[in-house]
Amino acid sequence: MQLLGNNASPYVRKVRVVLEETGQTDEVELIEVATSPIDSAPEVTAAHATKKIPALIRPDGCTLYDSRVITRFLDARAGAKLYRDNRIWEVLTLEATGDAILDAAVLMVYEGRCRPEDKQDHGWVEAQWGKVTNALEALEARWMSHLSGPLDAGQIAIGCALGYLDFRHGGREWRKSHGALDDWYAVFSEREAMKATVPAG
Ligand code: GSH
Image (tube, rainbow, N blue to C red; front, side, top):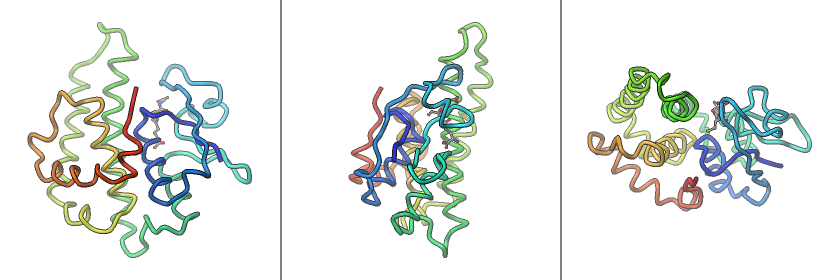
């Protein structure tokens, strides 16, 4: 199988963490590609209906996207139970929360990169950051116990989301007002799978 992606993408990181955690890294070749909302590599255009990464190309089945479909496929393939049946709605909601943090945080980056400076909307950027902080508050209010339970796909999504905030929005210092998440992430980011997938670029 081939994974279209790159080291900087937090959605790709989720897939790579699942590969590491489930012992499948040797079965997937990472093909480094570049994407942006206005220009994607030809391989991405061919593989993903809306020209995004990650996409998982399988020799014996359709190409899979988006990241949540790929992680669930890889989990089922390995029988790893990162989507535990008895907590499935919690796991999926936590995973959706991690992805929603990423969606807002990635859009902030695109606003700065893809629009000329005089067309950038700072109020819109701050509103996206407001979504991020609202989600961090919800996590601290309702999810700390789940986050401390057995490893699942929801935790992986939150770990990759917090890693991305450090990577692209470090100046906003999310840790200052989210001590419980800071403590949780300090432990989670020491997992071998997280250390092996630290973003670059
Ligand atoms: N919901 C998608 C997923 O979970 O896979 C989001 C994927 C996504 O937005 N990836 C970014 C991308 O390909 C890279 S970090 N952006 C190009 C674009 O927005 O057209």
